[in-house]
Image 1: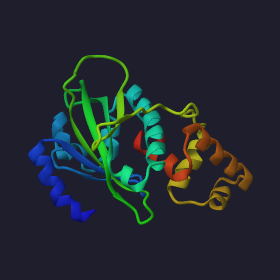
Image 2: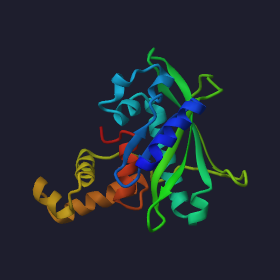
Image 3: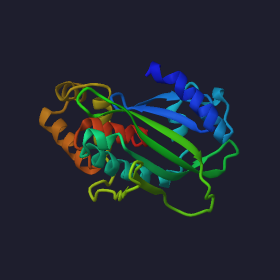
Image 4: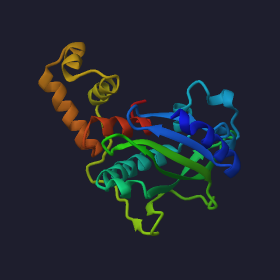
Length: 227
C-alpha cells in the first residue's frame, strides 16, 4: 500500500477528488486522501481518529442499506470475472451523505480494483468520490458496473436472499468471526454448542447472500451493519 500513497495523494490534489483505498483482507479503509473530508466541509481533526466509521455514519441510512445490497451483487459479479476482466471494470454509484452543515448532498463514487492478491482475488479497491452533478432530491441510489475499455454496462441487481435482518446472536457471532475467532473458540466464549455456532454462521451467510465469512464481514463492516 505504501508504494501507492504518494501517487494517490498527488492524484487527489490534481483531480480534486476524495480518494480512499479499501483492503478486502482486513475489511478496512487503509487510505484516505488528505482532502477527503474537505469535500464535505470537514476538517481532518473531525475524522482522523475514527476515519472509516465517521464517514459511514454520514451516509443516509436508507442509502446505506441499498448500497450494501448492491455490494453483495457487485462482489459476486467480480468474483466470476477472469483476472483481466476484474481489472477492466469499475463500479459507479450515487448516494446521499451528510456534509458539515448537516445537509444531505449527493455524491458520485467510482471504485475499481487497485491490486489482486497472489491467487487473483480482490485485495485492494480504490474509490474516487466527487459531488454528483445531479443534486435533485429523490429516494434511492444509482449503481452500475462499467467495462471502461469497451463501454459495456453490466446490470447490478441485489440478490433475493440479501435481507440483512440479522438476529442479535448472528451479529454477535459475526463480530467474533471478524475478530479472528474460530467456531470452536466462539463456542467456548459464548457457552453454546459448536453446532449452534455453525448454524448461526450458515444463517448469516444466507441472509447476506455471501459465499463465505470474508464476504459477510466485508459487507457488514463497510455498511455499518454491525454497529
